[in-house]
Length: 105
Image (tube, rainbow, N blue to C red; front, side, top):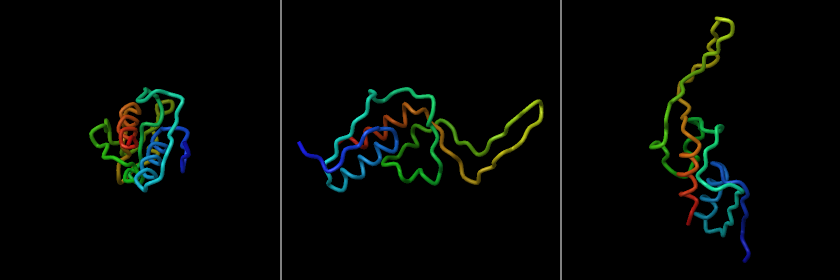
């Protein structure tokens, strides 16, 4: 079989790319070495600027809204950032489940 596009790696970016390409009518083969959804300790945050790029409404899987970060060293605290809009944090397992379902046709 011939495909217009082959995507290797189906995290949020790969799943989103597969979704949008298939939606435009291209034939897409999407591959990943892992079974999905999976637990992964990193990559569970999405910036408010990137939120609209994901193909599905994932508000149902948001665990936390992060509005800033405070770092502490030897009892001294430093606020590194204060965000006007939150970063959405979720378990990667849940994020991949919703983006992967959107990419499946």
